[in-house]
Amino acid sequence: MTEEREVNSASFYEFIAEKKLMASRCSKCQALYLPPHPICIKCHGNEMEWVEMKGKGKLAAFTAVAVGQSRTIEEGYSRDNPYLVGIIELDEGPKVSGRILGIDAKKPENIEVGTPLTIEFMEQGEGRNCFVAFKAH
Image (cartoon, rainbow, N blue to C red; front, side):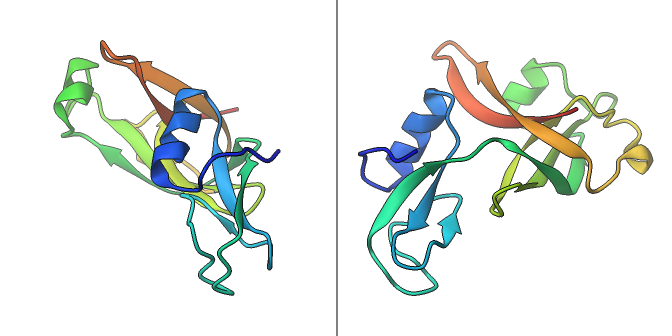
C-alpha cells in the first residue's frame, strides 16, 4: 500500500494516529526503514515510498521498567508493577520498539525472545495520543 505523503517523521506519526504502522521503502533498491528515512542509507536513493506493515513479528529484546515516566505511573506502573518495552522484529524485516502487552513483567525469567507479537495501537491522555504497543498471542 503506497500513500501520497512526504516521507518524514510528521507523516509517520499521522499514520500512527490513524492506526497504521508505515515504513519507508526505497524505490531503487527496495530497502525498508522503520522509523522511516527520507533517503536510503544503502544506495543513497531519494525516491522513497510508504509501505504499510502487517504489524506481526517476534520479540527480539526486552526490558522490564519499574521506574517510568509520569504517564506510566498514572497508569499504575511502579517498582511493584513493572511494564515491558522491547524491540520487535517485524515479519517484513524492520525492527521497531514498543510497549509489550500480555506478558508478565514481574517474571522476566519466563519471557522468551522469539515470542510472537501483534501490533496494538494504544490511546492515552486527554488528547488521545496514539502509540505503538505489541501484544503476545
